Length: 339
Image 1 (cartoon, helix red, strand yellow):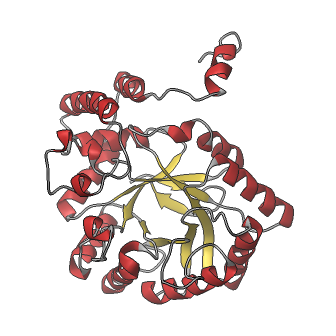
Image 2 (spheres, helix red, strand yellow):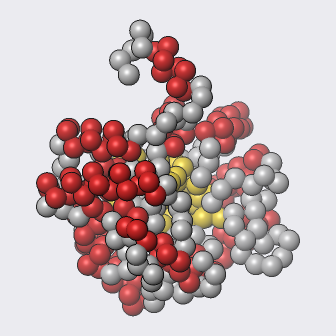
């Protein structure tokens, strides 16, 4: 396993991490995603650890908190401390019926941290992430609360999820001006079928030294190739079409992914993950699984070496149309830089 430094922190994380969204058996959308009990999840954590994974990503809303609880039980069962397995969790989405059971106000953040710590069974959270921005709460209030949590020792590092480039810029301006703990990472959706972050988020993250964690690298299983023509009525995407994929464009991408997989005697999923691992700016790719065997196949992507030609073919078939003003800038860049 290779490791990367999380942003400008000193924290080293595995380039492939374990996603815990499948842990638990919650209601609503989680009924379509989760389902693993404590014993099944513990076997996954053990398999991930054996292959060098040192980060688990969960959230307070996954299966209505059951995911965090099962993560804690698995860590206790395997006797894993922070030196062996780091834990990332999140705050922002609704966790109860009350007016203050949602958002990034100080009250909800402080209560959510305490609840998450009890579930996970540790005295601190290694990476505490904002699940999204909160349009109602000033970012200054949120960042002050997070800074206090780091000072108190309840949180080691802070991160964001789904932040736009503008959100990252605002956060960097506030933390720089107030000398508060900066955002170390941004967890984003990035895959061969969704390369939107390349236009703004990725350059801004590079400018501020912000790490990038990737969620749903297989586009909800789409890039595994098993949901072609949506013929699996019991599959996850048949029940929950998320994240969205343009079917016409997706089929063209899958065709090349399958060609490369055949050339390398690999699975389509391994090719899609290897393409992400070849992007130097990506800190860690979060992979989920239901069985140790499935997890082992996905983690084997770290050993897959794509040739320059294969990378070019995958880049070309998945390239997105640049929005304005980027297509205009590229047009004018022709006599300045090689594009």
